[in-house]
Length: 300
Image (cartoon, rainbow, N blue to C red; front, side):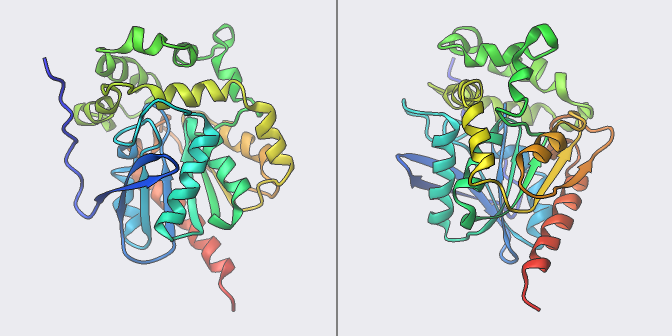
């Protein structure tokens, strides 16, 4: 039976685009016409759709972009490299293509190393960094793969060569709908069948797991490199750490990794998927932070 590849209905005001950069084709959406630019970067098992409720709230006063990382959603997933360094280079070229930098960069979950690399190696393109439920290799993230200490079994599965395709192909919707989202969601009604279908759609493609497996494999290997980047050149932009289901993990990580003091917001009764579970609260936190950054950087 032919599997559906029809995308979910896009909320009004959000438009779809493609950018051919760094040897791949990135799919991204945009909204808003004024204000400083925001670039939203999803985690696992997501795509730009993770932000479809958040984008209109931010776009009322800012220009907003949300990208499907290489290998995710509707972005290119040809054979090749899918580590965080490659994804960070993709974002660097995307910002150059859009000619909108510096951006207020927002990353969550497994995109942590990607956005951290971008912010440290191309500081001229990043005005601020918001980390949502995000860890970093070299700063404790690897411990989440240790099942003997309460870690998540799916990290090892995704990092193992060919195993996701062997075990999850044809079961994408069941994996996401019965395990991945329910296991880390505190507001169950926030993620419905339409959301599960939209996220599953990208993984049903041939080679649909390449993006996820690449980021998880690099996560387990790049800790020393991320720590070196934290030391030099360092992360000097303003940072907002948003914690929810993971408690203080994001705050503690960014407090170690950033070269300056960070801002911190903890959301109560919200799970790991903050942008889907509490978009209004998240929008308020982001807007308060980035508007403060913009005000502080405006002469006079």
